[in-house]
Length: 342
Image (cartoon, rainbow, N blue to C red; front, side):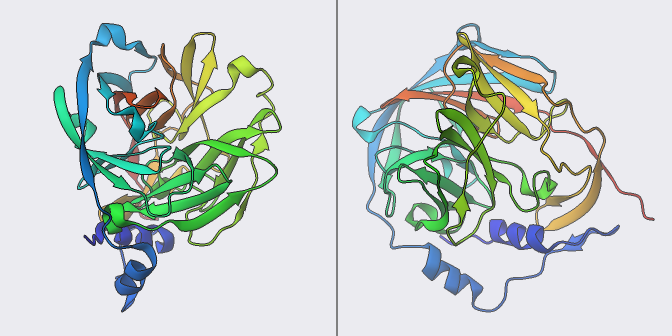
């Protein structure tokens, strides 16, 4: 059940020092795994299976239009299951666990990876989330964790890569000022592209406007304030979802904005985007330079259906319990070159 690869990446990314030579990750201190297992993992929850009907959505009917060569439509799938299981909130994709969807009923739905889903009647493993509360939004993967925003304003993280679906919620933050988080995005931590250490972007409603906040992954609850964006005054043009995309021709954060009947993904460069950074490959970090910074405000793709969440190359449309459309995009990442020895 315990996996160390994501943990080693986390230790490296938090402590790596840019050098001309590769930087090797230090092993965790003695007893770390045992302490983390006690803190982050519960007993394996009782699970059951449920039927899921998977249908392919033809490209012509998927309603996806990519605007730059670095984004390419791959396939779209329609998943239908028992509405009593709730509405899917987001997508966590892991090489071992596959696709894990959190629902607003406090359940984990686990399927095979989106790329491997086949049409027909399939089965999903259904497991109750430990201390679920009232989930309202789910992030993608960050160091093997997924973040959950709850209706009471709390933000918690589950170490799915380490504990599987037996993960306990770890306190990560609490939203104040009457804000309500609707979406969570993860930016690639190895790029160090946002405000130092803050690679999670929360978006939602605050005072009748759209607001955002950046936060970091942690194990203590910290105050989080959604700050209204100046341009979010028109209801019809507010973002509905956020995603971290390291994409050539764009920047590291994309906002899905509704304009009329179309949802457009537009890119945005984070405030402290680093051209000089460290790329983590496995357990080794390599100092690199991004060839191009990307264009702020670039239009990346448009969708003719309501987008509710996204992570990596997976875009979700889940507006009602028991049904979710999954769109898979192939993303050409920005190019990097090794830094020259000085």
